Image: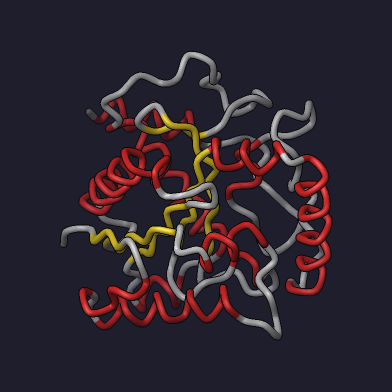
Length: 250
């Protein structure tokens, strides 16, 4: 299977049945007026047609990692020409056996294997201004020399509906998008407050304690990429441990 990159929801004719179904469900989630999705910048990006969409295979398969790398490379090359609310939305083909048996913690491990695998096959150097250690408050995920904020949603997240989707899904946002947003300080402050209000109404679980601001001394970006259904989290980031294993395999 070759990953499909879509630049607008209106191009649904290019999609297979499962791809069309997940895009329709995503569109419904982003446009729901009765239960508005908490991340306001994401909904702005959706309405402005600045989101891009990728459809790739089973997240357990090695080939899928290369599909992800190809689509992310394409997005990296064009993202700065799309708009200031752009993100790449990745939908994994998630078979029934995976949806029926995987727990939130299983998806968590799968997610980190994807990120570690991307770094292992990245042909470019890690940006010199970003530490390689995820336990440094200034660390963030990088690929193709671009800095990204990662978000993962899974079928297993139930209490935290803001992290629930029918298939495993990533939302990949360039750091420069977040920097542009934060330049308007009053606007950004008001939007962040509204986001937290929406989260409190949207989720069946309290706002996760790991949600924080980039660069704060008590903030670690990796903790926000994947949120469990309760307020627990991993004590250590698995990124480097898996990365060393993958490099050894190569």
